[in-house]
Length: 247
Picture: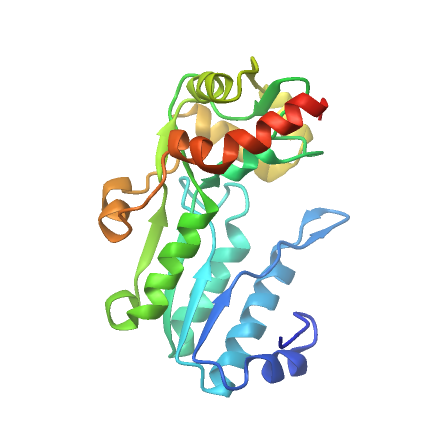
């Protein structure tokens, strides 16, 4: 295993030496003032620069799906990384996944996961919201690496299903045997969690949202999972064990 430090560019050059492809997922950077967009973008650009100097053939970058504009949660730094890729002269593919189905497994977070059987988030309760299983992101990334001629220069918004939060809670209740429900936070609660979360709350309540072409992604990756198939595969078992333990 080659190890590199996002904040030490020389180590990145050594880490990517001899590689044909790089799967780029720079970590979100948080500081005293919240999400550090500039640091996130700098880290992504450092990997791109190292890969270019190492002669890497193809970068697949996983960012975040477009919600409406660049004020939505988590988008700003990732769009800067996308621009760095476009300017690099390298062969690249951009994957923009929506919210993960695995977010239902989150613990200790102000949004998502379950606390006392309640899933808390900013999405309107009865409006479908797109989601995707992380295994499907990996599957599309693998396809991009295996056929760079087909995927180079493409930006793909990734989603596998669109389910309203209240309907998702009903599916999870049936799949696990434990009654759960959804609670939509208020605008004031969203603002208290940060500017980008507040902005995303407002966009969502103005009717905006993720808009991946699910059927297009299914044509690329026929094994694309719905929330029901994800629950049947691994999700329900993990949730059931946590509910039973009182987590």
